[in-house]
Length: 158
Image (cartoon, rainbow, N blue to C red):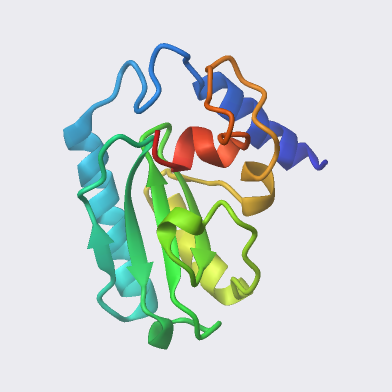
């Protein structure tokens, strides 16, 4: 495990609060929505397209999804960028449906990843790579039996 992976896992553990499953104690919905919308606008510009946006998420630890159309990506598959309610964390996967993105996904082209991470960095969002989120959850929050990964804690329905 790299030093960066260790830093990201420490961040995930630090954000974890067993009393607040869906969003942190200091959650500001208006500010989170504004940053989410800004990320969508940055991705529109970075990919030269209009991304579809799902803002209607409920009962989840994530705020919403931004879908970059396949025609705008180097990998030629659509990309789902998911925005967590915790710490402005984001992650992404190619193809599939958003509910299935805990599964490993190959094919995120390096140039696509670079454009996403640059948009995230411009807004002080933290890119969470898939391999870190696929690590077994070992935090203090009581999770259901099927919720075994860090992905489930910050990027899934509760």
